[in-house]
Image (cartoon, rainbow, N blue to C red; front, top):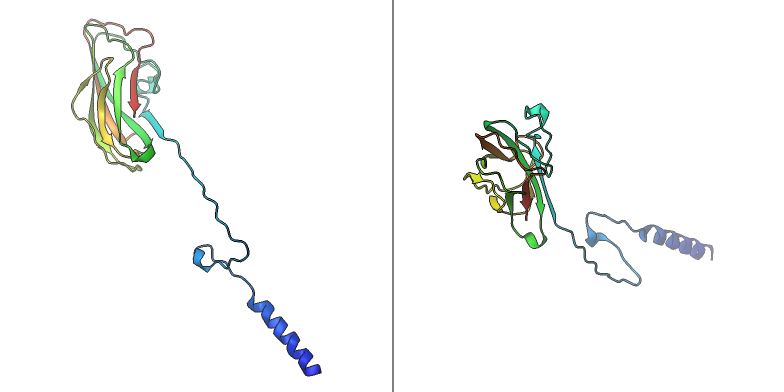
Length: 191
């Protein structure tokens, strides 16, 4: 009887060690699942994102313009003659169903007769970004009508700061020293 009792204890202890489950999270096929198994479906919708930023702040006092401008704030010009400079347009774009986008530019108000503002992409750089550039290299004479400055492009991002994205050169002709209307803005829109 003693032999049978020892044999049952030995078999019971071996079963404890062989029933241990090991789960490898990197290999779902190795999961040992039991009992009532069910699945629950889930749907996740990610909202589109569109962001545009100008780098450096092209008309700040540090850039020598004497004005403060951040994307979406008024742009003012004083003095006679012509002035020019450049800035970088950075963007982030994620759409629903991988729809392409364009970047449009327009003035918020009419530019006074005798003054002109021209924008032109002169360079692209992909440093720290993930996108395929598709710029309009032709000069754009700013008006209240939307004009394409960057043609169709897919989801991506340009990277942040100077030296990445689209380098835009601006040229302002103002021989009569006219002032722009209060609240005048240059609007960049991605859609």
